[in-house]
Image (tube, rainbow, N blue to C red; front, side):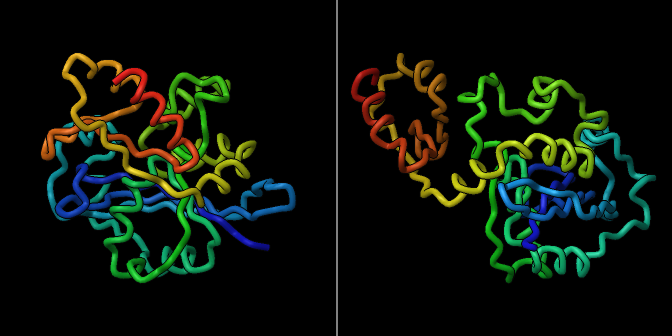
Length: 225
């Protein structure tokens, strides 16, 4: 039986190059016939970053300096779970992956990743937001400890259980960066509504989209921008 992982990390900040992981959560699941995920095991641990936490992180996660004192993640155990996994899933994958792939124990692994936030078309399924908290509420349950790693993994596991095939298939699709060159300033609100972001360095509106939606984006830009 192939296995997959759902992973989540809590960190001292948003920048992988200088911030540190303070908690990891992992749920290992089996991939059964018909894309039915079956819970197999879980792992969760805190790690002392050897620095004082920012008050904003304490408020967000509920994790404080005293809780972290002397704690250490077993990265060898984590690497073994990663090594045996056919797929690794994270909600807002780019964030978690950026931190985890900086660990020397994981850096050489060639896992296939999927994002439960962008590789499932939650809007198409009738949900207004892809936020983990809002999706849980819209599915009729509450994550009791939001921004605690293992609880976020458990929430993700419950949310993807009916969408695993879509999630897996979409994770293999090619992504393209679309640039809205010479877009008039007064069109900024329409661009934002359609998922475009402002690149402050290059002074341009852009969007990361799947290749299959490229024609749709071209039509949007031609008609509106």
